[in-house]
Length: 253
Image (cartoon, rainbow, N blue to C red; front, side, top):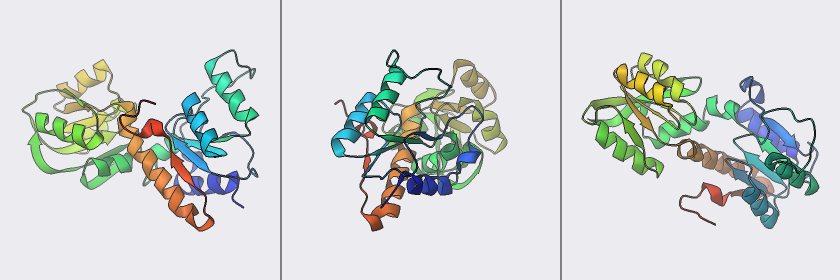
């Protein structure tokens, strides 16, 4: 019988929880380790809709990228949105496991998958950044269109549209402060999910093209990859792994 401990051990083997950042709260957030797993529901965030999906599908474990709780709570009530979600999980005996910054930085994790989706070659990386060669040199405006197509979103361009680029640095989510390392590793363009105004200005002032793809779009491919890996690993014991509809482009339900 599959238990939460089995899934925890598998995820920990891919992305050790002790490598998460100090501010993070990755790990088992609700449930118990010896709890049986009837199905796994994978999502970027634990929302009311995600919990409803998991309940409807009979899944007893939700695996997310972002932790539901980042800070300690003094009480567990339904007076706030986070408390309502936690109470619903506990009432329904639903386990919640989050793999966040440990998965961001892991080999084969969120940023490695993002680099693959962007078609990067000869990729190198440190921590939360990956840098590699584009399939072919192109103008920044062409790169913007290329990345918009690859990520299924509208990528925002900061810098000269006609600038020639051949080497791209990527850092998913809120990784906009990664451009200096990208430049040091030879990138002439930098993509992140979120680039704050002054990060973008500094990036462009230092000769790079900055591209903002959205937090969701730069992390969702890595969550699909985790779901596929879980399903492949668990096929032998016939545990069903489902991906939340919130990760499907265009879903409005």
